Structures are given as C-alpha cells and as structure tokens.
Amino acid sequence: MSNKLYEVFIRSKAGLNHRHVGSLHASDDKMALLNARDVYTRRQEGVSIWVVEAAHIASSNPVQEHEWFDPAEDKVYRHPTFYPLDKEVENM
Amino acid sequence: MDAQHLYPYFLRLADTSMTMSQRLSEWCGHGPYLEEDVALTNVALDTMGHANLFYQLAVEVADDDVTVDDLAFLRDAHDYRNPLLTELPRGDFAYTMMKQYFVDVYALLLYRALTESCYQPLSDVAKKALIEVQYHHERSHEWLKRLCMSTEEAHQKMQKALDDLWFYTPELFETDAGIQALHEQGTAPDMSVIQSEWSSMVETHLAQCQLILPETGWVATGGLQGEHSEHLGYMLAEMQFLQRAYPGCEW
Image (cartoon, rainbow over all chains, first blue to last red; front, side, top):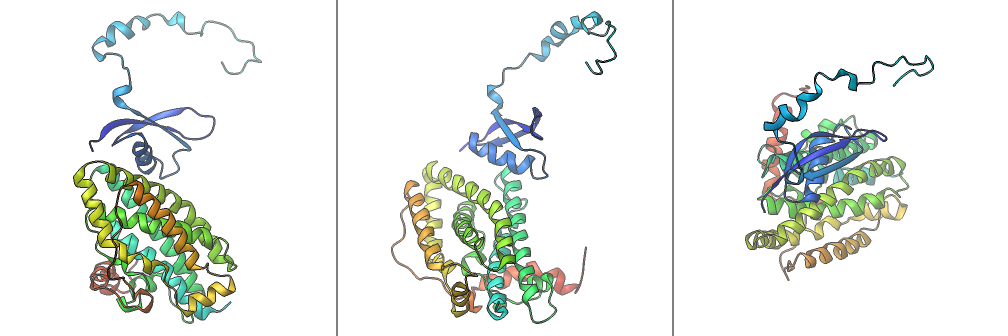
C-alpha cells in the first residue's frame, strides 16, 4: 500500500469557506479524511474537511508568474476605489 | 446505590482504558508514518481521558481518600482489573490494530448501553466517551479492511494477529457477582447481550475481510480477580516509575 499526497481544506465554522491548511500522506480518500481529522482538527480548528489528491489539482506554472500576473500591477483603475460612495453604503 | 459493587466495577472500566492507552502511547514516535503516528497517539490520549473519568467515578465512591493518580500510579498489578487482552505487548501494527478493533467494538457497545445506566454519573461519562469511541471504531474498522485486503503479506499478518488474540476476547464480557448485582439494579448492562452483539458485528466484518476464525484454543481469564499475565507488571513498572520514584510529583 503506497501513500499519496493529499491537500487538506478546513471550514473553520459554518458559513465560512474551506481554507487550505496543509497536506498529508494517505493510502486513499477515506484514510486521508481520517488522517486530516487527527492531524488538523484536534484543537477545534474546523467543522468540515475536504481532501483532494494533490495530483488532481491543476496549477498555474510558476515559471509563467511574470507573464500571468505582472500586467495587473500598474492598472490600479481596475480596483473600484475611484468612486465616491454614499454614506449609507458602509462597506464595499 | 451500593458502593461496594460500584468501586471494583469502575476500576474494571478505568483499568481497561488505562492499559489500552499506555500500550497505544508506546507507538509515539514509532508509527508507520507521521500522520498515523499522530492519529494513534490521539486515540491514546482520548482513551486516557476515559480512564481518568472512570477513575474519578471510583474516587467518588471510595471508602478512603484516594485520588485518581493514586489509582493509576500506586496500585500493583494484582490490584488492576483489566482483561488480559489490553495488557498484551503492542506487537506489530497488525497486532495493534486487530486488538484496537476488538476493544473499539466492545467499548462502542458497552458505552452505548451504559448511557442508559440508572447511575447518573456513569451515564454522563458514557455519553462523553461514546462520542470519541465512535470515531475510534470507524478508524480501526477502516484500517482492518485495508490491511486485510492489500498484499498477501499484510493479510497473513492480520490472520496471525487474529489467531493470537481471538481467545483473549471472551474475557472482555466476563462478569462476577458484583457486576451481576449492578446489572440487576440497572446500573450495568447485561454483558451476555453485549457479547452476542459484539460477536455478530466482529464475525461479519472478519468474514468480509476473508479472515478465518481459529477453532479452539486456551481462553484467557483472570483479570477480574487480579490474576494477570507477566506483561502487566513490566508495563506498570514503566508507567508508574515517576510517581514511585518521586512520590506526589506534579508537573
């Protein structure tokens, strides 16, 4: 039985998103869930767990970091910060 | 309520958890891989928590001023009331998980029944422990399936563990006059009912795992009377060393 790498996502409480918390090794999905419960939720960190085999995650290429993400750097007008907001709208 | 019967019964429950916990904690740093090392010791800690709760029940009905620490760390092997199964050396991983599975099913059925106990403090403790035992059972059940269904070598090791441990299991359900009296009062469940539920669950699962039950053998007994294997003394020597060498030591 060979172990595979899994990524672990935890929902810390109802209504919040699952967030990536780390990774672990397990033989299959069920054992990954059990291991995630024991490694990542023993101190009330969560109410729900997702695990996904790391090999199943499609990822952007770190080599392309500049060509993918740098063009947004000097385009501050894409942020909605140039509009006066009515007082009634407290948060946006 | 009759403290005369309650006290040894609580020791029976507590000592069973304490010895399970101590054997499991021996895996700390020796697990087959990091995640399983953490998981095994989590179960060990949960189980020590159950021992602590049962010892507290014993302290509450004790004649003298004993503490939980006195009960765990200052009693000798012949005062321990656990069945022989739980004091056996941890063995390899197959052996550990087979024993864990047997005891998890036992605890699941026993604690579930104890939640109905007419002795309220016991019923409260059983409810608390049951939640954790349900998870322990799920874990050892899943491990058993995987170990039996993977390689030929793994299957052989599980069959060997079953052959070695099977005749220690009937002792889990042994009773004496005191436990019978507690059952008649509605404090403790009928252990013959627990045993038949246990056999039906375990035998079905072992058959699914394509393991074969050994036919006949020596059947372990003695724990209820304080008659133990030689292993318990060595285990307690290690577990109790600090309290014996530095009496009253706290940290």
